[in-house]
Amino acid sequence: MPVSPARVRASPRRWSVATQTFALQVAVALLVVAVGLVAAYVQARRSQTQEATSRAMSVARTVASTPEVVQALSSGTPSPAVQDFAEEVRKETATDFVVVMNTQGVRYSHPDPARVGERFIGHIENAVRGGEVVEDYTGTLGPSRRVVVPVESDTGSVVGLVAVGITRTALSRAVSNQLPVLLAAGAAAALLSGLGAALVARRTRRQTLGLGERQLREMYEYYDAVLHAVTEGLILVDQEGRLQLANDEAIRLLGLPDDATGRPLAELGLSPSLTTALSDGAHREDELRLTEDRILVLSTAPATWEGRRLGTVATLRDRTDLEHLTGELDSARGVTEALRSQAHESANRIHTIVSLIELGHTERALEFATDELAVTQRLADQVVGAGTEPVLAALLVGKSAQASERGIDLRISGDADWPPGAVPVRDIVTIVGNLIDNAFDAVTGGASKAERRVDVDISVASEGEIRSVVLEVADSGPGLPADTVELVARRGFSTKGQGSAGRRGIGLALVSQTVDRLHGTLAVTGPPGARFVIRLPFDTEADHG
Image (cartoon, rainbow, N blue to C red):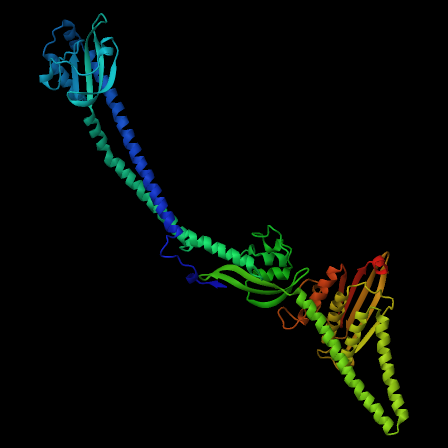
């Protein structure tokens, strides 16, 4: 059952699931990269600020401990050499200012010589008391990160202060120098994420056939509605023989368990022949198959997609009641045709007797009539001796007439005390009718009329407290091949082949199914000929109640 790609196409008005997945993944990747870049930039600024603070602190402590600075500040009148020394240190340490001042904040050095002698702009109170100051402050050079440390004399008193700082402009410039690297890393991450998203989208598009989520949802809803609405059973089996799909009707017809989906067919209790038919992928059309209690019409075909084999799809229809009714109708029709034939023959014989009397041959007419009456009585005695069940008697009468018409020697024997009701009437017709019909077909397949013989024996047997109706049907036909004798009692067996026209092809299978349902046994022997022996136990108390 190939599926055309044209049956499922994405709507140009809606994005497919693959496209939506790609767009979403790209958006998420870009957002993650953007957040990562911002976080990296913030971290870089923080790192630069920490590095600048550490560097400024180190420079300030070094300058504050220099003997020249300590001596100059201790003298109270620092020489211009302090300015030169501070500028030299500033240039060598890549800081923006190194300011030496007294405890009142009067500068003795500054990058701008014109600012020497002015007061330092910032907080110095803690440093004057011997502590250290770290702060962000806006001074003459603009916003800056600065540290202020005390200059102590040999006696431990604070004689001056040293301030070292780096402007925010310099920090930003240092961070900006790292931006190309950060942006390159972000671009690479975005590119890799985009490539990954494209691969995922390509795989998703292949798996979803380019459909959008609404189309997939509608397709599932429609398919699920169809599977549950159809009156035929529908199942799908994959290449490994596992059941992948079964609708409600298929579960009912096959008697599948609730957890059947995904399990191998061999574990579901189906007959070997039905298991094979459901999984081999062969083309079948309206073949009759049997389960334990049903007669099914099976059609199968390989399921493919774009030339690739997926498994086997099968449809099932229930014909159980129809086949039983057809069997009963065939039996009734056979009886009717036989009676019509007998009526025709009786009319001919009556005309013959009347003609003999008119011609004056009364003794000859009496002899002819007596012979016909003896034949009729012998047939009635055979039927009555075989049992007292009216339906069975009527069936045997009809089969006797059919046998006479087809040139078959049908011999009926058995006990007269077969209890009525021991076997349901419908089952009597199914078992006896099908066995005799098969026997008739077997002896007329090529044997001469002298060799066409069918024996029917109906009796009651007792084994301890168990009583059983024993039905034996034997024919003089060619018999069954040795390799099929043991298969006759198997569900679904037929001597006519699977899928053959007419209902005779499932006769033995119907018999086997009925015997199993009645908890009986079926035995077959032959060749030469074929002999079927059926034992059906019955409830003695129920029969006499």
